[in-house]
Image (cartoon, rainbow, N blue to C red):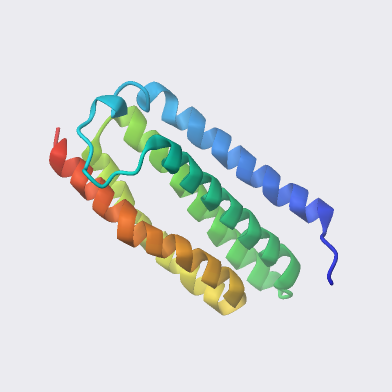
Length: 161
């Protein structure tokens, strides 16, 4: 059995914690004020489940980053795949700021649809450099396509202003 690289583990957990804090700061009070007042789609999961999905997402990010640092042996492969992952994670957090601070379901919809481009790129990069990580990200991609996109579209349709 392989040993866990504690320094690498601490680094990836730290990155995920920083991203979570950034997302929380960017969300601000918009979650409890503006967002709470919106009409929600019938299929929206409760807030506690959103938090759980977010935690699973950060866990997946940490596992992927760990794998990229440990198992991708090519320096160029590490640079490309880690940079792509970090950009994807940052975009995800910046979406919080755009959606909650601008208080716009249209901005949320455009941001979610635009996120499909970097998400696809990262999926391809991971398929090239670390297939198990591509498999992990595929779970997120499926959630994104089957829940997030329909959810934000429905939220926009119900709250077009």
